[in-house]
Length: 135
Image (cartoon, rainbow, N blue to C red):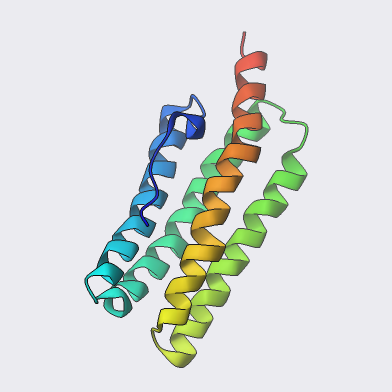
């Protein structure tokens, strides 16, 4: 099942929204490859992308939070670190055991769901704070 970009994922920051769309696209590309029997081949590419891109994306978000004096910055940063650790754990399993359908499942359950929930619950709070404090 592909993830769809919906208005409830919008933060109001073009840069952040575009980066979120890239993350969701990477997950969807993996899921599409799986539907064609090519998930294992796509897995390494997806994990490498997520490992690199999320660090860049989170750094962008955190700069915005610091600039706007977001009051829950420390917790938000911890959420980001937990996610980075999750992706690195999946990457470690990939390197040790090779690609597997189990790892594809982890990407879907632990990574994709986390991204969607994080945007809807946490990133929208940051966006609202930035909007309310930039007037």
